[in-house]
Amino acid sequence: MAGRTENIFSLTRMSWVLTLAILLLLVAGVLFVYSSCYVNPEQPVRTLYLKQVMWALVGLMCYLIFAMIDYHKLGTLSWWAYAVCILLLVLVLFIGKRIYGARRWLMLFGIGIQPSEFAKVAVVIVLANVLSQPGLDFRNVKVIGLILTIVALPVFLIMKEPDLGTAMIFVPTAMVMLFVAGMPIKTLVYMVVMAVVVVLLLLGVLFLPGKLGLSQGTQDRFREMTGISEYQKKRIEVFLNPSKDPRGAGWNKRQSEIAVGSGKTWGRGWTKGKQNMLGFLPRSVAPTDFIYSVIAEEAGFVGSMAVLFLFSVIVTTGLMTAVASWDQVGRLLCVGIVAMLFCHAFINISMTVGLMPITGLPLPLLSYGGSFMVVMMSALGIVQSVRIRSRHVESFR
Image (tube, rainbow, N blue to C red; front, side, top):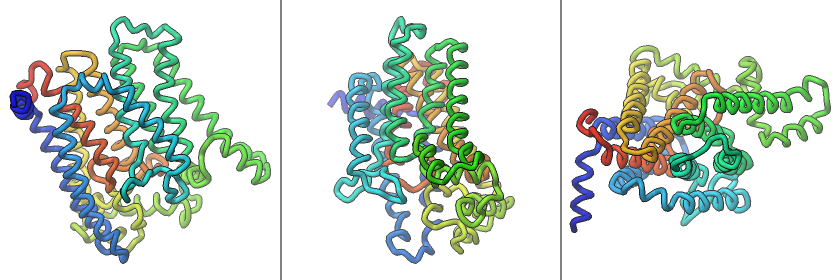
């Protein structure tokens, strides 16, 4: 009874600002998921908003549960959680359900589970546990090797699904955590340079064979070496050359930009977006990857800025929690989770307005999706756990 009373009392120390921002985004997510699919002729799709309500409620329960759990206890289970996620990532390559040419989902009692989403949080927790060890020497080759392995293994497996968008999240998240953990700037710069070199090499392997006039079969063999699928290659081509294939690979990008621009200042009104209602913005992705386009068209610039403001509240509160944390573990957990959320929001919104290639990355708390919702809400619950147990609580309630 004492433990239960202590947990309930702990919830009173949560940041109501963070919780309010989360709740507002969840409500907006349900409203615009409804708007994005209620005219869809397929009945199961028309009821996605009901499932979104269910996942939001499950997410809220996970949020409260993780807020009550002392975040230090997560360290003892971190390696087990990481191992399970790696096992699931391997299994999904063999027995995962294939959707749109990718194996990303494991079916459990009729519910699709996406192991890559759970792997994100598992990597953050493991890295926080490793990087918070006293006397950690970043000049030690074994230490660097361990850190790189922790990040590279899930990235490799996720790339094999293939899921380039999700794999992209791990690298900047890990880099932010390494910076906060005290890795020398010089070493970080070397790692960034190496990452840039790898990206340039991948682009070279993808596109140089075509420029050199090699056969299509040879081009396909080079592409397969990179682990990038044909449709992902086309998305990169469309980003580099916006006028290329506007009715094919460039369709989603073009229609998304039109939807965002047509919202103007106040938007067309809820459920009145023409790009969405008439199906120009593909109905299969409007509730998920392109939910921000629906919001921008129907709520306009004002609504779009409101969404950005709520995300900035979450990021700012998370960083303030990191600063106020008593220990390095709490600090690293907060910055890792905040970096993960920021990268998702930045990449998703950037792709909807044409600043980045289409990656199929959902928008936190707004896009439809069960695994992603549960993972993000659980992660934000961990931030609250750190906040509850941090010093100077009253200074940023």
